[in-house]
Length: 361
Image 1 (cartoon, helix red, strand yellow):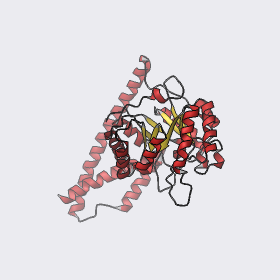
Image 2 (image 1 turned 135 degrees about the vertical axis):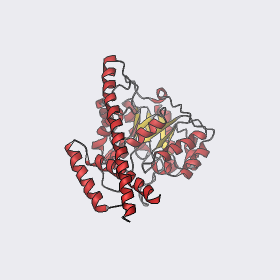
Image 3 (image 1 turned 60 degrees about the vertical axis):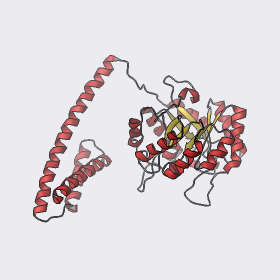
Image 4 (image 1 turned 180 degrees about the vertical axis):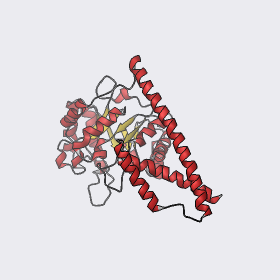
């Protein structure tokens, strides 16, 4: 995959490590006055990339779904009068064609679109022969392969200026966030496509303006390249997602508080200390693999015994007791309950796999 997004082309202000790239503007373009007032306030504070939703995919009907293409001249006016780059979401080929007519500079694909390969391919076909940066949000569910597939489809249409937007993932259970960050998913995306710039959308992750700084700082600590933040001249009056939007002045203040850490280490003493600690981690990981391997050998023996005595593989009472004990022991060692559950579910599933294999032999 060929990636050629030059952050120098779009970055709005110079900071020591050239981060963060910021896209700011309202969740939805509501009126021409609201679009222009927000843009003026952002421009006055040094921002150069203006984002606004023209078409809004909503979960339920009879809610505000954006003004549609009548809002595109407003973005054109922002571009012509203020010299800002403009960005909007496209969800089908018609959106692409209409937005291109009005000179929109950057497109992004929303989470629902990314989750639908047919929709992504339709957009890719519409973009064939067009040179424009395309940002792709993660799919609604935590599926890194589906996310990568969207990049491959758009890239195969000839789009080289690509970047990812991490906006969190839907969850059925209760969550502190509107969309659970699942940070391991964008980290894995970056591992598989190292040159792909990665932005975080704290607005959609949080759903609450009071949480934006925490998530934005976490993204910077993970060396993400930028942020896309919903910014409104009067957030409380917004027609969509009012609680997660902030004013341009609040955005400026949020960014001023961010701590931007170094990605590369040029101090030999610090590097040696880190290498020593990493070697300790490698040693512990080797021991873990050996212990888990030995644990699975015991699981194989249990499988043989169950097969011989016609006993089912899953023993729910035993599994519940084991998990509760491990949670208690793990908490005493400073490990979170969520971590313990994830680890031992994976180990338990591998044990079941081993016993199933024995049963079928």
